[in-house]
Length: 146
Image (cartoon, rainbow, N blue to C red):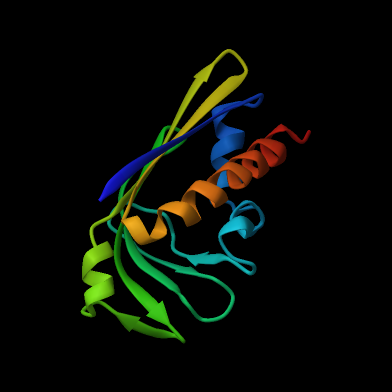
């Protein structure tokens, strides 16, 4: 797997950026570049299950491996969902399973640096290289709204 890094400096306190990232109303907005109708089902607590969906019944099953509010959240991808059916055993899933996605927020003054690290496999590289930049812009836009 390869690890990518995406970074944004946001003119908002870390609490506001955190709310945008994981808020029920804002999560679907900033994740739209990954798939229209994106949603998540989780309580974001450490050890909890997370279901990421694309609006067509497809997505990923993951686990929240760490959550330090307003500072750090880590997700481990475990499986896929295809047409509402969870898959943990197919070859494609095994290749992707264990990929991590980490979000780190650091505040200096009234600016927050959001750093996202993400593991991926070669067949998804181009997708993430093209979707993360507009997603980061949307996070910035939403967090800076007053």
